Image (cartoon, rainbow over the protein chains, first blue to last red):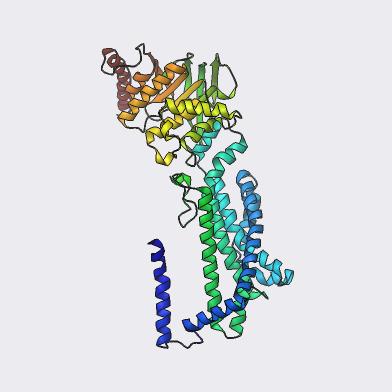
Length: 263
Length: 253
């Protein structure tokens, strides 16, 4: 039933699109007919161009995200467990957090060219903060009363962290990963639109220059569908791994900001 | 088992520029294997005393001496908190084994957990998560976690405060069973006078950070709340409370 409810809005949009096309409200250059878009999608799929560009973008997201996670996650854990270091890095991080990655693209092209490196840096800048902030929030905003339990039973610092603090931080960390994946995808599209010779963003900007709005729409729809698919797979995997039934912690999904402190 | 000799114990908190004395010159002797109940109104220093005894807070002055303690330094004193403080991501049995996390002997851990699961009537719920059990069961799990740790002195900070009358009575009886079987030293904080008389061999009455009276209770377990002796003890404590109330009202006027 939930899935059917979720299909209502896309169906309404498609119906409106068909009607608008039928009564010729807009020029077909502004909004191409659904039929043309479908035919273009089929053609792009058949020729392999769509899949090739999607694969290039997807690989960039995965590599960029992995590099970012490998940096942001341990840094957040380190700063979370060593609050005395925080005042040294906080002003710089706050400064960086307010700079949109897109604004960095011109200087990145100058420094790194339009190759893969500049895309990974853009993904890094966009993905770093969701992962870093959520992980840091998770490992610092834990239930202090539960930590007293560890003190009473003479837990080592390591046990206190891994057995009491870290499990409480998991929902927040998962939220960070989920947001980070979305941000990776979005920022890459920005980078590919400005400086790329392959990828789905490049396919869109190339279509715009060739006055092919049908390809632009196919590109946009592909990004949305792939993003949705990645998120869906992520939630499925985390739910299976964490097996949250009965634990009162909602892993994945839109409400996963709920922490153990709220239970 | 171990006992306690507390001498001249004081605790002062500094809040802003203000100094608040939570405990003033506490002198108390707790005999090995005895059950002491501490009563007093909210904010009289009961919880602070327990926190100092288990090392969760540092004392400002005085000494706490453990008598006749044996075994490792670690598991001499432990506390059961007012709220169960269970780990929501662990099952009942995992929560009970939580206190033995550093123990390498897995057989010892599972034996201990199994013993206390049965003793506390939680065996059938061992695979349940805290969100799936009642408040009484959660508090029993918390007690089981402390018992698995095998402390020589158990401190209890109003552990039955949030329970209904039926579960409260049931757990009181279970506590007496455990006390009689294990012979552990127990310090039990409560603001319920009847609970203090039902459980304690000595009732310690506290007010504004000081011990104002120690009342020995010589009745056998399990105590009949309708007996004359029980009533006599209740009257003794109530008289102290009434006197304190009178003094407070006079001060106010």
